[in-house]
Image (cartoon, helix red, strand yellow):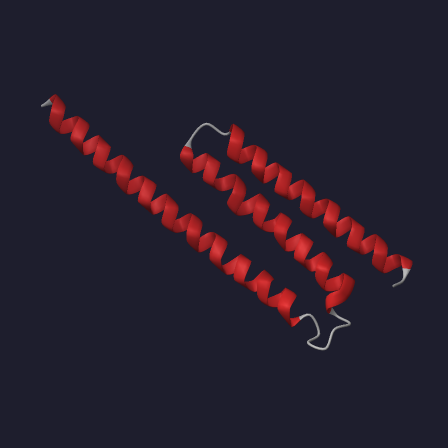
Length: 108
């Protein structure tokens, strides 16, 4: 492995770790459910994607499959994370509306 490849892999891992840390801090520190949902879906997805890309550059391209496994993991991650966040937000919004209706009926 050349020095340029090692530097690229190192940078991708550092960037991925920074994004994952930022997403985790956002999950822990943001006040509202919808805001807390934003941190892991955006930042952590980019972080894990960057680490998987580093794995692809490091060893995946030299394998027989040409990094197909790493590309499949990345594709799966980038498809499932937004769908999961969307479904969680719809469920939380429906629960909030149900609570608002119950509160309004209790006041009248």
